[in-house]
Length: 259
Picture 1 (cartoon, rainbow, N blue to C red):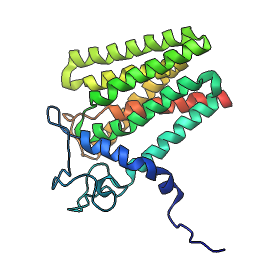
Picture 2 (spheres, rainbow, N blue to C red; picture 1 turned 60 degrees about the vertical axis):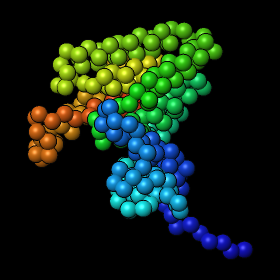
Picture 3 (cartoon, rainbow, N blue to C red; picture 1 turned 90 degrees about the vertical axis):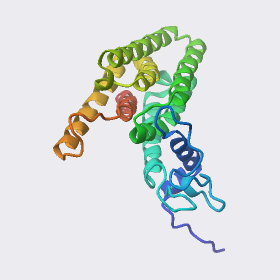
Picture 4 (cartoon, rainbow, N blue to C red; picture 1 turned 180 degrees about the horizontal axis):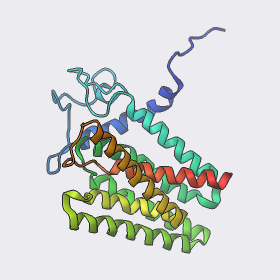
């Protein structure tokens, strides 16, 4: 019995099911503040979903009509999604049910799904839409609350809620005090869900995640300044670094627990 063997790389087969939804989220929401959500190609306004094929929602990220790039760079979103899934898996499997009971794991996975488009939206237009950050915060706190009730770990939830409040208020305060030189309010709203997730694991995980975020942003900023791609007056989106720091801390806790 013979059959045709697919020559497509395995990672493309894994990423294909989530590509359209994630690319749609990035394309629709990558608009400046105050403008309506995008409904078509940013170049020719053709529908995002081509009559034949996925068009701009496919891994190549090209409009089905004008063939120009639209949204996240080709395949980068898919590779990022796989990397995020790998870090989440390392954290959950490594820490086991002690660190991530079922509903706590749901909280992490749901947050990660929102974190991928948020990363690319922030890179594109320097904003983190409420449509993602607020539901993410509610989802994380709600799932962690259910996990605490089911497992009798109310202390873990209280710590997570306290960490969420500290992170959210801390980032918001810096934003209000320093304006454009500080963070954005979107960062503060994202910090609520991040604080809850890492606070669930413990204060050490929270500190580690934030330190990694600031360290990574500093290294990237210095590299961009040295290459003269940005000036001292430019600002970098901080959301992607918050996501990186969170996932790094989650994976670190998982690896430490399994060692």
